[in-house]
Length: 251
Image 1 (tube, rainbow, N blue to C red):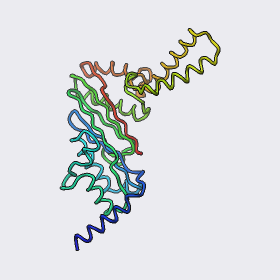
Image 2: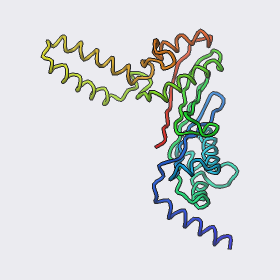
Image 3: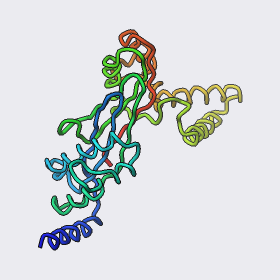
């Protein structure tokens, strides 16, 4: 009878798995000099507010802290179970009655320093619709580095930069902007040497808008994020470098 009921649950889950899961939660799990972030989807916001679903997201985030990519997390053991994360979520579909899906995860770590976390409009501890990780390498005070990193994470949540540095920008995106700027500048009919300067100026402005280190820091817009980091080094007590960031917005 138990086997029959389990089979019914799985059949029910398979049927529901075709439905779109576009709601859900972002979960973060901080660790020692590392942190993980995950996205688990549900069909409705009502289920996202359900304690059982929130526990699933929390548990998946804990698993993500021990694994480097989404596939590894999917196939890893779910906490307190002999099942994989994928199978545990499939079982929960039958129990909760809605399609759910583990969409993605990412982990950041540093050898020295801190990985700061931030969840915007959190619905419970480390759970919300938008989450950010920021990794700061430093030999200085890790607690101070984490405090500054959290401010940068709040900045990233607000501005959604395309890349950490100019070098990390997608070359195709830069070329596309350059082509648009070139056409706009040439339409002005100005000499070629002036046009080149116009393109340079517009590219510089583009970088200031989309590159994290070049953006005006939301906590203190008089400074760029890069300059704010330099100023924070006095408090941290050693040179510091933002090595990576991750921003997960639901969907």
